[in-house]
Image (cartoon, rainbow, N blue to C red; front, side, top):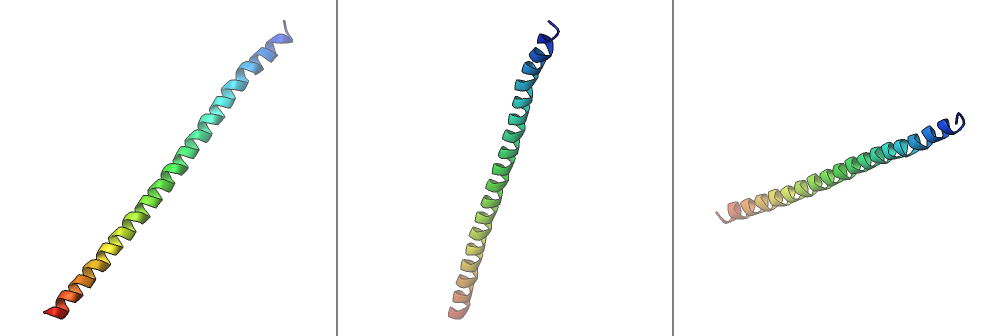
Length: 67
């Protein structure tokens, strides 16, 4: 009985620790993925804004030249 108790306690603690580690890894992965997506989206929006800005300056220069 005495020898079996620590083993059973260890066997119950193992899956709990494993699930905690897995959840932590999952959370960190989600955080990394979300940050990557955020960075990509911000870079894409910045590029699009820059393209629109350059197009606006080009059209304004074009209009200025015509006037």
